[in-house]
Image 1 (cartoon, rainbow, N blue to C red):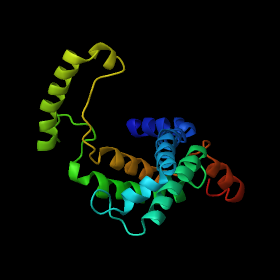
Image 2: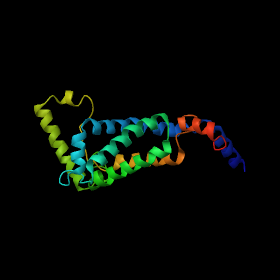
Image 3: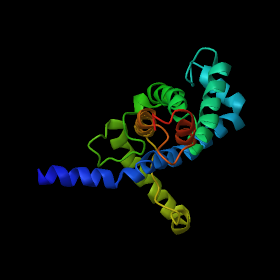
Image 4: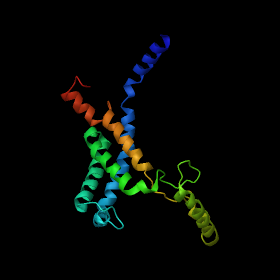
Length: 199
């Protein structure tokens, strides 16, 4: 009984910071989504072509509409997440966007975003990337300023798997369930004013 009481006291003591978890998720996701939306908007005609082309793109129907929806969801959704306004509502189209990205763009590449041959999730494509990376490093060491080229970080090979899209999906799902966060979102203060019994 002592352990249960102690645990309840612990839970009560952290109640005042329970809004920090959704706040951190929102602050992490917002710039990622805003940047993705801005990139699509800045190159909108290329985005539409990529969404619509079945040979080298996604082959989606109504590519201009789909591209516009993706841009709106990411740009507007990112801003709304940042301030914590309509968090649960905006999480839904953003989750759909992440699922579309995961299954129409990244699925064939497996889980890993970066090719890591030491991972238990590595498949043939990832394993083959190790040799290519070593060869690229040799070429750069022989014919380039390797120290300067690697001064900002190591070279990697992008595998472009579903890892990031699914991670963002899970984070958005958590926000759908938790909301914007107690004391840390506009949603909380609107709810407190208009639905005080809920808060």
